[in-house]
Image (cartoon, rainbow, N blue to C red; front, side, top):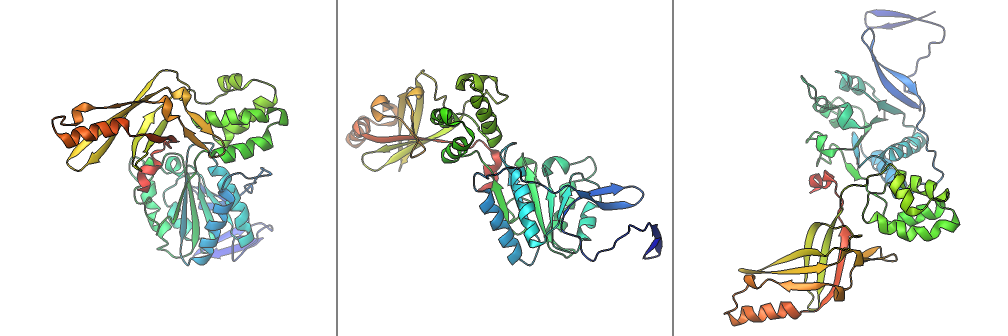
Amino acid sequence: MNVVHAGSTYQIYGESLKTYSQLPVRSYEVGFSKMTGFFLTAHNDLVVNESKIYGSSPQKVDKVLRAFNLTDRNFGVILSGRKGIGKSLFARLLANKAQEYDLPLIIVSEYVPGIASFLSSIEQEVIVLFDEFEKTFADQENCNPQEELLSLFDGIDGGKKLFVITCNEVHRLNSYLLNRPGRFHYHFVLGNPNPDEIKEYMMDKLNPEYHYLIKKLIGFSMNADLTYDVLRAIAFELNLGYSFEETLMDLNISKEGTPKYNIRVEFADGTYREALSQHINTYSTDRFYCWFNEKNGRSSDSIRLDFIPSEIILDMDKAEMTIDPEKVDRYVDEDYFNMDNADEKRRFEYLCNLPITKISFSRVAEDFTYKYLV
């Protein structure tokens, strides 16, 4: 029998009782009992099953741990992005790497009033992971769980901890968590793999006889949100011998919506114009019309370009989308000019004939996250 004396309380435990001055390095999950309050229970270590990690997550993990090691206060990291983009993988990589620094991992998977005080009572360096934080700690009828944690994140009660939040919907995070590097130093917005990362991944995952489809897949990525989860599923189907078209049709991936692009038109005189957030279906054979406006002192002029979206081409080497200026029709709106004024008439004629040197398209990341980063 073992008797533990704390305050005025004596508790009886069996012979298996062990006491530690520090939490052993492993993974834990916070639990709660109405009878005994908060406690930690052993949790399986977060395992990284992938033999090769794609993208920049390993470098970012090293960056986080290096910064945490150099600071003398609590340190926070927000991981945001859509589902399947790699947030959980990042967290697993971080938890595994942290063991080299003797940092235990504490997983918080539910909100219970008073949890901030419990976590504050752990007076050693640990990682505290809140997965899908905006859901687990969503506003409740009589309280705001996220606000309850602000003093914990700031480290007012002492101790030094690495807090990691993953979230899918940034707009549901408390405003006091965003744009506050003193509270959450890093905010990594995990986006879709770029063309080079897609190529590297598919070269590894696709059977050699299907490598010719990689270029087609990269072209498709310009019009669809392809996470690594989606790429894994596509590679699996293609390796079974199904066609590219059948694979996209049958897979449980989004088939709705038209992506947005920023269009940049460069002219021979060194000037350029842009049209932002244009919905373009690059497979369409219907003509697309787009206005490009530019302010010029007290006046303004407007140019419209018409083109067929399916004629947009992808340069694999440069990961760039362009269209041949010769395939684009131009219209300059005469209503923007006083044609009785010689200077404005010359300006109109100049814009009608000014050679276009390049028209390029860049995919817009349709993630409200960026609203909070400016």
